Length: 517
Image (tube, rainbow, N blue to C red; front, side):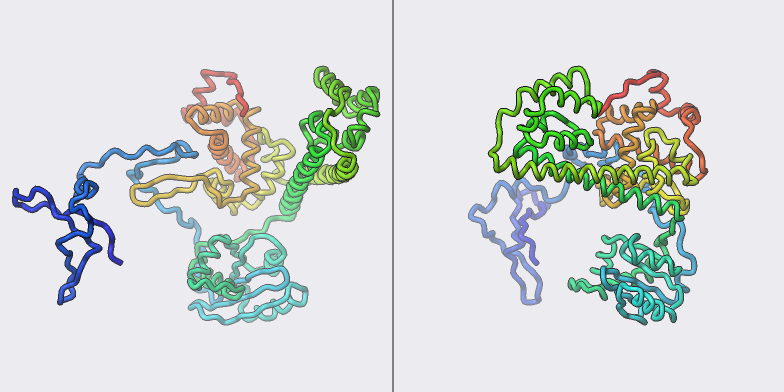
């Protein structure tokens, strides 16, 4: 395709050439020999427009001033100039030995009711292609058809679920693959856009054959860790469900009972739901009287000097703007139903919390994660369940930092070298680390000093916590590998020996003021 760009022809040696001629690439013709020639005249009404005359034939030899860019979110991690010494590629540090000697490679494209399996040999020929139902007889059929290929490596587009659990129980070496990578492998095999379960399994099996020597197998955790992991994940799911119900309850009360919303700020607490059950409507609140109001505040341990007086005065004034009787009758029933569901759900969350506490106390790594400042009995079990007990899963600290999402993603092309926030990570782990490091600032002076130093350098709250999270996770990884508990005095001594700026800040400010968000 011809370019529609007009540019100047270079200046001739003759001094008589005052104004360079204009070359129009779009108005090109062809000679009899097939050579492309530019016509002498232009298609513009003005032969020498100012926008053409002002353009230079070649770029300047000296670099001009660079454009001012907006400061990135990652702060000091961004570089506008390339590094003088390029960093080495971070390839797989441990390769799967004798990968080319593997005779067969398999892939399972899982679904809810059935699974598709493709097996290829070492040259890529499909030697098995079948589908089986996700039932006990179906898995027996899978065992029979896979028997000629032995315990060959197999890949799947997930690292959890019933299909992965069945494969691990049968002794297969499982290589989970990220869905984004699976999509790219599928496009490599079918650039036309064909999308079927068999094509997906074929692309994954061939990808395992060609690239699997650098993939990391899925290492099964012990029973204690898996139990703790599932309990923590389910507890988080129940908490999210409680949040959705609280939002629905607040929306319902805003339709007919805004006085209740003004009375309490924390609607995730049981006393707020008990208030709705005790006084479901503004009329019921007014009819109850001051004695019952005071009894409610004392029973739920809400009696405070100023807040109790303010609540009693608001309840005595009553609700000024009332909804129609039809709205009150309908919405009050929904509010009572939501309050009852929330109370039941809260009891189940407390049951999960007691089970998690017991499982965490019995775990062999309890002393390591239980000693972390700010983790306590809530975030400590979550960190242990997400990181696990198999040390080979994270052979170095960098792998843990990337999985937790605290290390940025590098982007370099030409003279552009920058970094951005990492999104491809374990979101449960990143959220847990975010909460943990934020709580650690309240008990660790060095953590608060490091956080405040990052804030002073222009980082926002989330970016400063990610930087602090990198510090904490490096410590945690070493403690986890050596089965040690956290010793703050030992860490402070290491900071002084290495001449850390955090140690200097602590010496200048022995008790730094902790600033909250």
